[in-house]
Length: 153
Length: 153
Length: 153
Length: 153
Image (cartoon, rainbow over all chains, first blue to last red; front, side, top):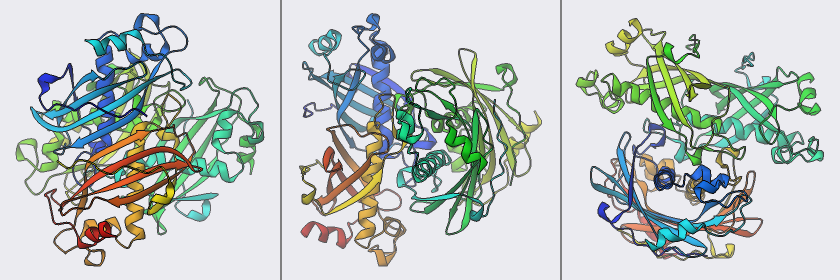
């Protein structure tokens, strides 16, 4: 089992990419804050926008489009093997959240992403996800070359 | 497009089946009540338990197991074509909710389900869903005979 | 109980406002499409953006800020009394969805909103929500004048 | 910031309590498995059932009922400060999941819970949550005595 090794920085300048999103009322809870489970889709949405920004849209990766770096045998999914979130200060309804991320710890089988969630420059949460590469049936599969190259950058 | 025609009754005795579930804290919102979108998975959970109770577990229907009434060509999904909910009184965290349902208006292509959500015998919401039968690729497919027979009961 | 009376048009030109959002992978289901329950937060997100666009941000309405049309006694929520969705064609992961809406049927106690969800100009779903005005404790409250005026426009 | 220190065991016998739940179709994703974000509400549901089982229902804790160990000044929430999940094997639609948990690492300000999610005795995921005690306005508050005593057991 992969173990997260990244330490998310609290300075946005240490991240490669930032995606801004707005919290939804549906994501609040009876404590009047954004429910802690809602953060995981935020991380995912930022990953998807990052993949698009670097020329590998996730739906193309999933479909196995060669243009997106697939190898034509049914596509790839980046399964989530592990997730860890530290909630530092709450998010509230209608907050504009900057989700910054950077890829690291790329191996032949897994890669990790570190995240910083901030509002107006103030850190609200940090997170790490660990991903493995699987084929359309969920079986471990070879990591695309462009992912390995991201880790070398 | 199918149009809902059922009028959900407010007397539990008018329903064929009741499933009890408990609301989750994750389903509350900043108004301190269960968010209105959370009701749709409640209806779905009750449908799934109803199918199990009458001998047609939904995962078997989806897999096309002949024992569950599939026809072995890849399974069936009961796609949601329409949903309507009337919220009468709020649900709160930790409420035990009785979701009662009854099937009606079965045609060759669609069927409808009426629902009553109650807590301790008090009506909280009523709902109707309209379903079509599709195959594993989402294309319209023949309704299983056992569904048509439910409408004749 | 209010009953929806609006008939959602399928021509975007018949709507007052359009908000574009992108579907999330977390909102897909095992049928490979966006789960039907995910549409309700889409409608809500569009409502929130509409209120912001017309100068009544929902968090200010909820806080009772007089600048946003509150009356300083603890704020207002627009509770959902009823929702109805017709699913015409599925949404998929990564679709850019235009959620168009228009307010209608405003009374002293309730108002209704009609919605059209489309992708690239193609209708995917229509919906209606019915709302009542409540105070911070969920009790029926006077509708702000600016809402009543929207219905007269 | 608290840091998780518990190491979740993979033997159910090492846990104090087990809650069984069933996955929902709404929680699946387009990979055909339960979406990773859905696990957090599973952990929460198990926590809530555990608190009920030991005589401290969470709604009473939140309301500040003295019978439940509150101190009458508006209640307590167990805010989530940190969460970590390791996904070992996927969960699927309709799985019956045993969520086992045990409290540990109780201090004056925080406590931790370790979890094992298993299906038919097979480990599917492990997790740790770190909680702080807050009052009804989200401010840090004194940990109830009964929580501190749990850590001594």
